Amino acid sequence: MKKIFTTLLVIGLFSLGALAQEHYGAKITPEGAKAATELPALMKKKKEMNIKITGQVLEACKVKGCWMMVDLGNGQKMRVSFKDYAFFVPKNSGGKTAVMEGVASWQETTVKELKHYAKDAGRSQEEIDAIKKPKKELVFEASGVILM
Picture 1 (cartoon, rainbow, N blue to C red):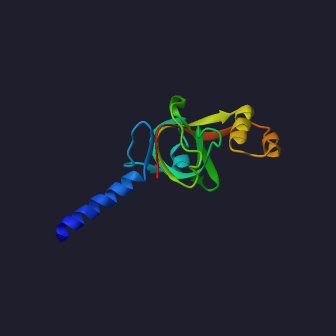
Picture 2 (spheres, rainbow, N blue to C red):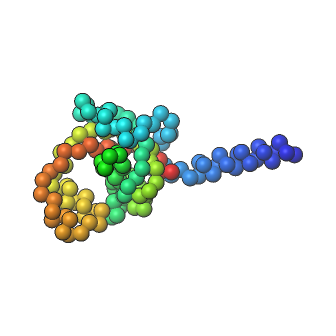
Picture 3 (cartoon, rainbow, N blue to C red):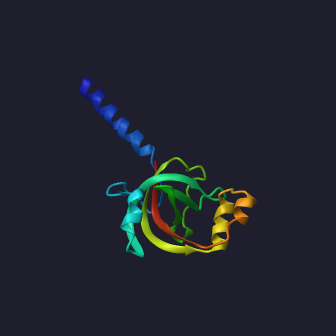
């Protein structure tokens, strides 16, 4: 009887862990993911890289959930968009841990795009108007995301 109870308890705990994961886009697993904080160093001499990473979501687009910002450490953050605009994440994803698989690349984001993202994030008009220069930044296009 004790063995049956223990077995059921273990199965129940594993089921709870699986329920806590929300999958978006292509089915991926967390195995083999590198820390997002390692990405800037890995990308130092590369223009583009296929990779699976995990990191803390800082915020998501407040309009549709069509992008999210992930913490890269040292005050840096990276915008994550979703391949072919095929899926979105919940608008309240900030604070969750994400596993993402896709392509990291360096991109120059135009002033127009930066202002659009600032508006989507709910920034004040004053903050939006202060954007005057394009920005070279590390970005990520995810084909699949797990939120935990």
